[in-house]
Length: 231
Ligand code: PRT
Ligand code: ZN
Image (cartoon, rainbow, N blue to C red):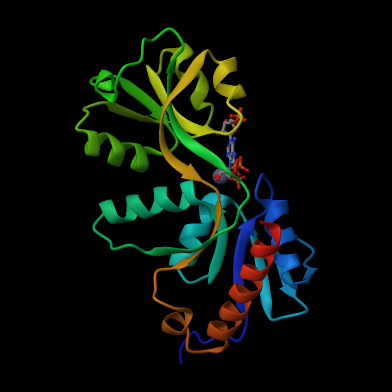
């Protein structure tokens, strides 16, 4: 039919924390590629599975628009964009097909070290800086807390010192960044790691009636084998 394709296209991060482990994992699944000059596209050689190298934030949109079939992205990014879409009246657009076991971190609420933390109710009428406004807003609403969400695209951890916010909601792995900014984590909103994301569906056959369905199933079988070996 229209838009039928005989190659599977997977979006991964071009550079950054997930770039290398994503390629290594797909490589361990038996995939190999020939890189294009601009390093934005990798043509699959061992199997008809191509890679698109992009910014992680673009991955959910590329899947939603059908430009890519699958993607490797942090659960934090996938969930943020899924909630944002649903808040605009959409239905769940994405499915997390597998958790991949790397890129582990948590989205945490952190407050100045001097605060005597007791409960989330203390956040009422504070300003909280974050790059994850949809996840934070949903959590605040669920707790019945009226706080102001201050959306920042980066350097969230210095917002309290700059007087832009009272608290923050940011990704934490070792905790060193929070400590360096005299902040302490008090709540975990999300446990995150890299995931294999795709469109929401029961199975791949439902998504694609061309070669992509079987390619995706083959990839998932190999992925499960590799993930089992790693654990
Ligand atoms: O260019 P592009 O947009 O693709 O990259 P990016 O800069 O947006 O993403 P990148 O590479 O920083 O992160 C990609 C993904 O890695 C994130 O979406 C998470 O799923 C995952 N990840 C795992 C992390 C961390 N750990 C992490 N520690 N992403 C960010 N951090 C940052 C955090 O924001 C904070 O500034 O590291 C700092 C905290 O680290 P600690 O160790 O001091 O606690
Ligand atoms: Zn990004």
